Length: 405
Length: 231
Ligand SMILES: Nc1ncnc2c1ncn2[C@@H]1O[C@H](COP(=O)(O)OP(=O)(O)O)[C@@H](O)[C@H]1O
Ligand SMILES: [Mg+2]
Image (tube, rainbow over all chains, first blue to last red):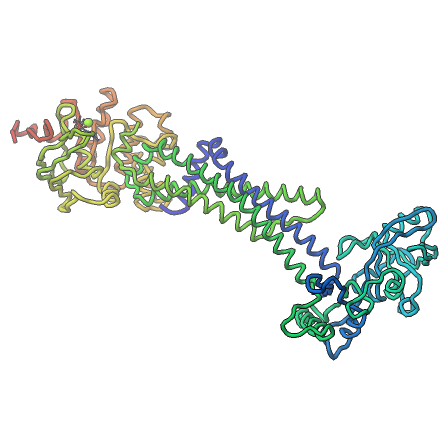
């Protein structure tokens, strides 16, 4: 008896009891639907956040004070920036920007806000992919060099301070001093900081007027330094060079810990992917449990079916069916059941992830691996949970099976 | 050639043992047409099941065509049932909801014939039992006699040499029973060994030899020509 025959006769016998077949498949349908929907929505969320992170710039390296090893002092300064800019010492660092972060009351006429204030170098906007402006322009090197009292506003902040007028050219008061607004950023989501509600001034101005944070040696501190590596492949090399230069600059001896910490965009992506990967696997495992429950449902019905068809099995054996023939017949029936359930589940899961994707506005594509895995799992469930009933059927003795009423 | 020596069959029903066959000897030659008679519970069906390799004896020797078949595995028995023996039951034992052609094709499928071959042979067998026009009828669309014909067609589909029938006319009226017996007679005429269990002396009278069984033993052989001879 070949596979095709077994398949056709399995389909025949399932068709003879359609309602029961569908009820039997329900567990597998629900399990596969859940697995597919969870995995593809999970993948969709992950890839959308991934692309958002990548949009900030792929080769970014964030350098900040390691507060655990700094005795409460800020450790980074503009002389570090100078050292890191030396192509002989850090050849794989391409660009380098710095920022001083602080906060102060800001007013414009009768409107006021308390935004996060960033004192930044001129290239800060470009490195952070913030170099598109709704109005006006960014900061220039001259602004930095002359400690100009000029400010660039995030779009949200601009709306708060200047609800009815064009902000560029107007004046805002920061900690009581007047600054001229020279630019407004376009809306931008995400990133290392909330750019929408921030205010940017030249780093020199911020160090002089808004922040008096100093390093242990008395230099004016910067909150963070942002570097880019020449390429993604050079990222690791750049990280090593930065660490080496900063250890030299900070006179950290061999055995001591760094007083700064480095986070690269790649690290961030890796960590994020690890978390979402774990989350997806966890949800998938929960959905997998429902698949197992579905499998037990199949086993239950197959056992009932073996009992109900004892006489049929007796007849088949009486006319010459081997153990193997009966075993295959029942095994194929349970595989057909679970596979059909699996295919229906894939379709429903796809439908749900498509609908959910539309609802929250991300694409949750059905990837081939997920589908293959679901199909494989469904067939596996059919085999594992079909084996025992099939084995029972195959082991029936023909005369006893024929006597069965 | 069927040759049985000292065949016993003991069933265990909880504590008690039922000795259905108690050391039975039996010889049946190729091409014989034999009736087996005896009171109810005397062991006829048990004997038939062993003859047909549906069951194995508790002890004793059973040679089928010279080959010892008294202690075969399940699958070896299945092969013999499939190729060399056709079985007809009192209760027909057809698959429910399955058309006649498929019923008859069943042993051919397990014998490994391909689909077209199988359907051809099944149709041929159905024609031989006079059901050429009922091939696609399901059991519940056929009369008792017709159902038994389907069962006979199934028994002869793989062209076995031995046909065993356990009270094949028991569930049928006399006229229909006669027709079924005509078929067995024809199969005998074509050279098959045919063994029929029956309660009906008229049925036995149409065979060449009657074997009487009582309490699990053969007690008498009788053939129409040479009268009665006790064993
Ligand atoms: N599977 C079985 N289990 C227990 N006892 C059985 C079984 N089959 C037959 N018997 C017993 O064996 C004896 C012979 O039965 P059977 O061969 O069916 O007789 P017959 O067909 O001549 O009426 C009876 O006493 C019957 O109850
Ligand atoms: Mg009987």
